[in-house]
Length: 260
Image 1 (spheres, rainbow, N blue to C red):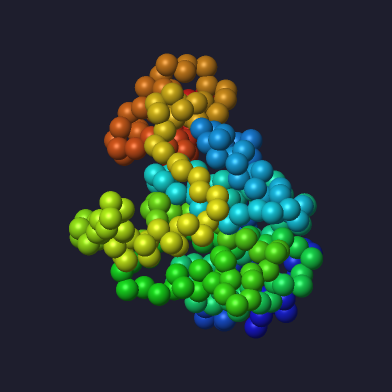
Image 2: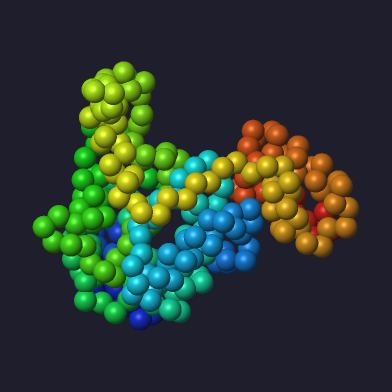
């Protein structure tokens, strides 16, 4: 089962690769998150939108790596991107890290289709000894054959370099003639991330940004002081301020007691 034979891309905006069937399955229920609903990541939104618009318009564009703190909106940004641009021909195929070995075959079936495809891999990272990243490298920059112009890779990760970094790797670096020569392990770590021309960093929210995200979720609450007090207590109990924390707070506390 191949990508072009199993999916009607005219009516399907997103699909996911399923290893047991060795093919794509249309995503039935898309996350409805909208572009304007995202808060605290305006810089990242602007950069990703600009790159995606260039991609859709057939202009030079980059593969994108969204890396940083958990729960800060990396995955939500990709979902909102699809909801914003699917009418312009953008399509997304989600591929799990363990299925990246199938990436060349997936991409082969997309060359001649009249859509712009983003291969999306969420929470991407590799451990020592894993080799699936080699297939990813070939799609990011090609080998003898260049990658298709209608395919880009957007990935999210908590790791900047996608691979584990150990102190021992730095100890193996050498200085020759006054120049630092990184160890091979460091070169391998950096070389994969370097293939993403657009790298966007995400950091934990400040308290002001976190409360702004909470306010956006509770537009009709009159007692902001009490709302903020509860929201701060909720975030403190989880040890992190993020868009995800704000969403979790909303799910737990929205209702008659807060005026919702």
